[in-house]
Image (cartoon, rainbow over all chains, first blue to last red; front, side):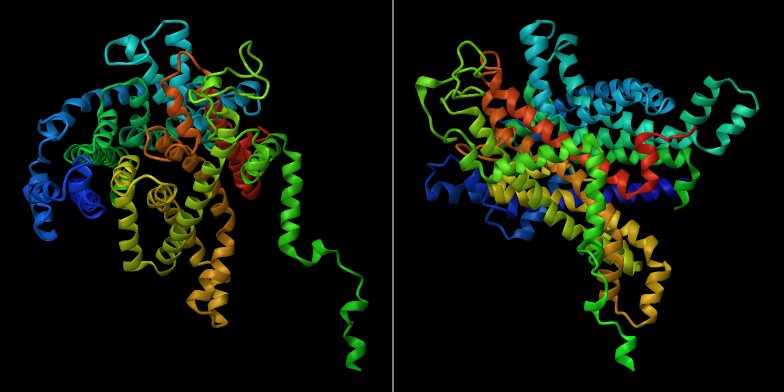
Amino acid sequence: MGQFIIRRLIYSVAVIAGVSVFVFIITHMLGDPARMMLPLESTEEEVEAFRDAMGFNDPILVQFWNFVKNAVRLDFGDSIWQKEPAMQLVLERLPRTLQLVAIATVLSLVLAIPLGAAAALKPRSLLDRTCTVSSLVGVSIPDFWLGLILILIFAVGLGIFKTSGYGGLPYLVLPAVTLAARSIGQITLITRSAMIDELNQPYMSTARAKGLAERTVVVRHALRNATIPIITLSAWQIARMVSGLTVAVETVFAWPGVGLLAIQAIQRRDLPLIQADVFIVALVVVLLNLVLDILYGFFDPRIRYS
Amino acid sequence: MREEVLVSPAAQPRATLLERVPRLKQAASLFRKLVGDKVALAAAIFLLVLLFMSVFAPYVAPHDPTAQDLMLRLRPPAWNEMGLPEYLLGTDPLGRDVLSRMIYGSRVSLVVGVAVIAIACTFGTVVGLIAGYFGGRIDNILMRIVDLQTAFPGLLVALAIITMIGPSVRNIIIVLSINGWMVFARMMRGTTLTLRTSLFVDAARCIGAGDNRIIFRHLLPNLASPLITLATLELARIILAEAVLSFVGMGIQPPASSWGLMINEGHAYITMAWWLVTFPGIAIALTVLSVNLLATWLRAVTDPMQRDKQFGPRMR
């Protein structure tokens, strides 16, 4: 187990190194960072002076070394927009995004697993068809649009929730539901399909034959064995939410998380802030995967040795 | 003597076109199955109509999508009291026709979707085939690269790249392709690994076929059906991704139109003009839903193992 964790740790460090190289290439080698950050009407001398001050005139390897040195200390310089350390701005916003993701995840698991299991128990029934079709619809609806429609109905029309902003339940419900919609659909579909697989296994007959209650057979035997694909998909969903799905949803609801911050940084062409945002989000995703991998290895010994 | 034994092709009873070309026969059987499945048929017809409308947009669209008329701004759909019959789905804040803009906008979704799939699928398939077929060190290196890129925050990286190289249709296609090839590589590698040791590959090697011939003439055709299914599923994802990019202002730029951009433009008017965001959103949702339904159906007909799962086992 110890060796397994060490191997995963080394791998995570490699991924983070890869991400930083990629971030460096994007921000320093594609396009002209100085021209991008300065106002359009700046003169050639101003641009040149800015390049000198920011070190964009140094040889690319020197720039890279400085970038790495600072990245290790999580220092990406001051945000041009807010005049504060970019990293600090991102870290302030991070918990709000994680809060949204956590609620959306709990919501989708609580709704989707019972729905998918119920659908699998009665294939081809009305309930099954309704579940499958509405899951497919949930997977197909663009989340930012769903958010706008929910605002139109529940905030503008009925006035139950707030249209946008950060705060307690009235602010939280709509963005969380919006974010959860797609993963509810996907988790329902995978639960249904995994359950159908398990329900057709011979051990189900054994369990029934030895007189176990149907409830025990379904929950203790079938559902428990179907959890691995469900966990895998949910983990993947969480990573996807953190690493991008929140961008559109936070923009719609003006929820001040890292996704909205990324858009604000991009609109203001605030390079240090963009770098810090991408880097931190990547770091969170990598850490998340690391924890999940270790949990997998813990629960399923087969994974440890492959 | 020999002439008598050999029957000349002309003397044979004429084989129908379908029998002579096996691919065509397969396609015909697939078509019959499609007609039999109402849901999949509806999805296919919707996509065909959409394709027709986007190709012939100048003839289908009732108005010029960029023509502004401030006298006609923010008119609701035609069935509304304030609506005008010639502006079926209403007008936007600049007095442009919403329906015409949607018809032209469909071009973006389809062009970006198809182009990204073509690039990502080709690249990913080649990488996956090489990794799976040759195995060993090459496989290891290629798959580590795939893993590495999968761990990236895809959309954020895409946004960052677009910020640097500027938003345009070409750049959106590039960025989404960078983001989408890994899935294909992974799947192709997995399937190739299982086929590599199969009898027909051994047989091909025995008659002296080279690596290239085995990969492209023997392995690839056998990988076609899972590949097509995956490509369809990915198409749905790509259409959504383009909509998100345009919605946050990093995709298609005005005055051109795309469904995501229309929702972005309508966002500010949401309380006074519901039709601006509603119709483009429905268009995206219906398109993606149709593609998803078609992918689900494709998987069910091409992979019998999946059929029971899809529709539920018949016998219990």
